[in-house]
Amino acid sequence: MASLLSLADLMMGARLVVELPRVLRHPIPADVARTTLRRRLDRRETDFLDLVLRGVYANPGNPYHQLLQVSGCEPGDLEQMVARDGLEASLGHLHTHGVYLTVDELKGRQDVVRGSTRIHVDPARLFSPWLAPHLLSQTSGSRGDRSIVPISLPVVVDRAVDLALVLDAHRARDWRLACWAVPGGSALAQVLEYGAVGIAARRWFSLIDLRAGGLHPRYRWSVHALRLAQLLAASTPMPTPTHVAPDHPLPILHWIKEVLGRGEIPHVMTYPSAVVRLCSAAAEAGVDFGRVVFTSAGEPLTAARRDIIERTGARIIPRYSSVESGPIGYGCQAPATPDDMHVLRDLVALIQPSTAIAGREKTQDPRAPLRAHPLFLSTLRPSAPLILINVSLGDQAVMQERGCGCPLQSLGWTTHLQDIRSHEKLTAGGMTFLDTDLIRVLEEVLPAHFGGAPTDYQLVEEESEGGRPRLRLLVHPRVGAVDAEAVAEIFLAAIGAGAESERVMALFWREAKLLRVERQPPLAAPSGKIQHLHAMTPRP
Image (cartoon, rainbow, N blue to C red; front, side, top):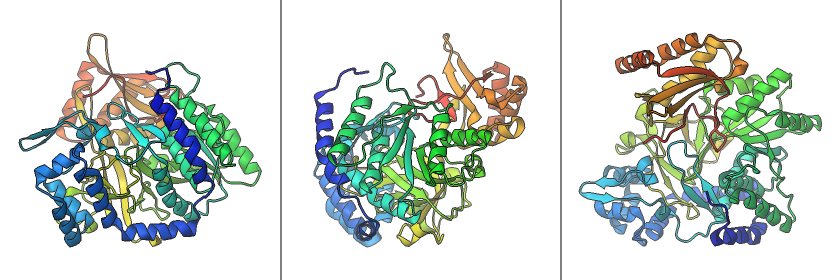
């Protein structure tokens, strides 16, 4: 881990301090955001073509330049196809001809092979060539090595346009904002989005201790640079981060009580698992969360998690996003499922190749099997930090056009995503299954038998000194007294209740004694997320 700031880091900090005040001095009002959104939706196809022509066809170093060459799609061909078939159908045609990237190809972990052509993707070659970064964000690493993604102020402003409309739909301008996250580039960018619409964060609760050794100094200097820029803009400076560990949320509970006591509405931005822990603490303390609002992203918002949150009286606004693309969707105000989202069609285009190619993406049967619906994403705005065409981020969802009647539909965001999960297979101890199966067992089956919350159970995959695989099923001590053998038996029985192959592998786990139940809190990733499967050793 680097211990000193580089010249590039210092230049980024200087750009942030000099250029951010202009953004903060002119917050985006809802009427301006509404006009901007209409213009963007009218220009979706034009903006996409401009982005590809400037960033891909004119840039031989971009991996998509080679993919488009291999597909035989020249600039004029693309323009004619988009004019004739529309954007999503054209993206489906490109996917059919090999213009797409899987997760492993995007990360550079696996070469792109299309026919006789082999391409190694350096993720940095997907960066926009005309934008200078003001912050660096990092992917969570939950699916492999971490990747660096640059973030510029133009993309912050573009995202803030949509945020302004979401907040207006919730009448949220007077809410008191706090952030409970790691103060890295991604979370800082979200705080800046709020600043761009005139809302300052009142408190920052950090999931990690910034005084801990081994951290890159960028975590600290970026906070200082942001505070300085806010002061120069005569804006309310971002508060100094206070360390609040995921399992000890009482300082946030106290802040919420203070805000409620003043007759104001607390608004906390964090991960779903952190929200569940905070709501569980509120329930234990007898605190009424009837006016509390959460915005959450980074993890699945499952039915079990949403139920615990709403039982306290709190509201939650889910946000679907990735570091590579930024926000993809915001929660519907008349949701059909716990994580029902409106796709931000002005920022991204989504296709599901099995249906998009046939031109049926808007009539997809939502009852079809979930694992049949992979998502492929393309960026549309010139401010996008990465130029992406048909990238799989490893997620799947049910996507459909639905009239919900909520304010976000009236804005033109008519495409919905539901049941958003990873479609990548999880392999632990030689047993392979989808994370949807693991989520069901950890969040529903085990709490139903032994009590506790959805975030009280976690599977940890590690390797012993002799190279032997080992699986630890962590059960939070607050669940109370449980029989470890009974927990293991219920877990294995639930995991093995599916196909014959799953039953065979569950039997193997039993006979090989790979699973061990331990009483300790689930482990948090460096980003602060509580993953359902925590890998202690890198997985291929």
